[in-house]
Length: 527
Image 1 (cartoon, rainbow, N blue to C red):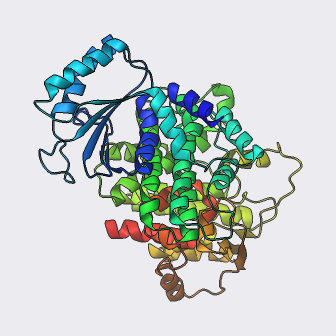
Image 2 (image 1 turned 45 degrees about the vertical axis):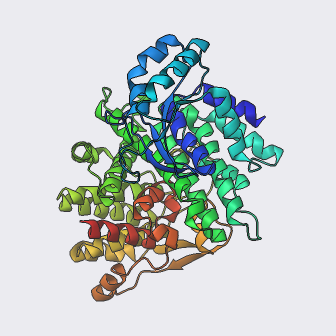
Image 3 (image 1 turned 90 degrees about the horizontal axis):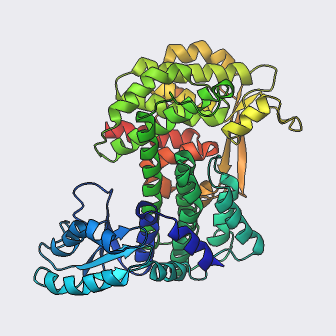
C-alpha cells in the first residue's frame, strides 16, 4: 500500500516539492547533504550537492515529468553546467571531479537515453565521471526503502495517514491528529530505550510522510498549513531525539530539512502577500468580515517571525522592508480571538522594535495585557485559553459550540510572559496602571513532566501551576525575575532560538515565561 501512496505523490509533485524528501532519501543512504538550491540563477545546474559515503562529491539536477527529446533540448544548457562546471562549495576542493545525476519523477524516452550515452563521450573531456540517470520508478523504490519498517503499524494509524492526505488542502492543519500520527511512527510512546540507528530511520520516515501529507496544501497554496506541518514534524523529531538521548548525527539533517520546508512555506506566503490584489480578503466579502481581522493577526505574526528568523541567523532578507510596511499599515486591524493569539502579537511587537517603533511595540503588548485582564478578570466567559485554535475560539465565542460550557475567567496562560515583556522594557508606569486588575487574574502555566514532552502536542505528564500576582509587587523583584535566563527550557530548544520563534506560533500552549525569555534574549543579543 505504501508503494501506491509514494507513487501517487511522486508522480504529481514538481521538482521543488520532492526536493526536500529526496534530500532525506540521500541522507538516509549515507550521503552528506551540503547544499540545497533555492532555485536561483547561480545554481549552475546543481539543485542538490552532497558528499557520498565514499567521499566523492555528487551533484543532482531535479526535473518533473516525462523527459522526451524536446524536454532534453530545453534543459541541455543546465545539464551541460551540471556535468562540466566543477562544484563551487567551500566543503569541496576546487576542480575536484564530481558525479553528476539527472533526476526526474517521470520516465525518460529512449531517444534521450541515446543522447545521454553520446553526450557522455563528449563530456569526458571536462569530467571523467559520466552523467547518471535516476527515473521515477527508481525513485519510488528508493523512497519506499528509506521508510524501512517505520511506517504506521496499526490499521487506524494507516487510516489516519490516508485521511490526512485526503483532507490536506484549504482548511487549517489538524495539528492534534497530525502529531498523533507522527508519534505512531516515531519511538515516542515506547518506554524502553531505542538505539540511535532506529531513531534515525524513524525520523527519516517522518520527513517523507510529512511531504506526502502537505502536498494537497501546497497545491491549494495553503502556506500557513504547510508551515505548521513542518514545524510539528520538527518538534516530533526533537522530542524523539531528546527522549532517547540520540546524538545529533542521526537526526540533525532531518530537523534542518523540516525547518527548510517551514521557511519556504512562509516565504511563499510573504510573496503572495506582497503581490496581493484583494487586500487579504478571501471568498465572499460579505461573510469574510468576521474572519478578516484574525487573518491579519496571523499574517502579522508569521511574517514577523520569518523576518526575526533571518535576523537571528544573520541572513540578509529582501522582504524585510515589506514586513515593516505591512505592520505599520495593518496593525490597527488586528483582533484577539483568544490567548493563542498572544504569540502572534508578540512576534509583531518584537519585529516592530527592530525598526525602532518601540512605542508601537510596547503599546501593542500593553493593549493585549489590558484585554486579558478586563475579559479574564471579571464576570463572563473570558478569552479562550491557548489550547483553542483560531477557528475553535471563534466557534466558541460566537455560540456555534453550545455543548461546550468551559469558562476561562480568573486565570491566564499568556499574562505573566507579557508582564515580563513590559518589565524588561522598563514600562513601570504602564504596569503600575494595570497592576490592580492584573492581581485579579492567576498566572497559569502547564509544566511538562520531562524535557522531551515539551515537543509533544499533548504531554501525558506534567503539572498545572497557578500563582497569584504579588500585592504589592516590588519593581526590583519583578525586574530581576524578568531578566532571568530561560532555565526551564529544554536544551534542544535553548540551542535553537530561531526555531523557537516558529515553535511558539505553532504550539501556543508552550508560549510561556521561559520560551519568551529565550526568544527575547536571543533577539537582544543579536542586535
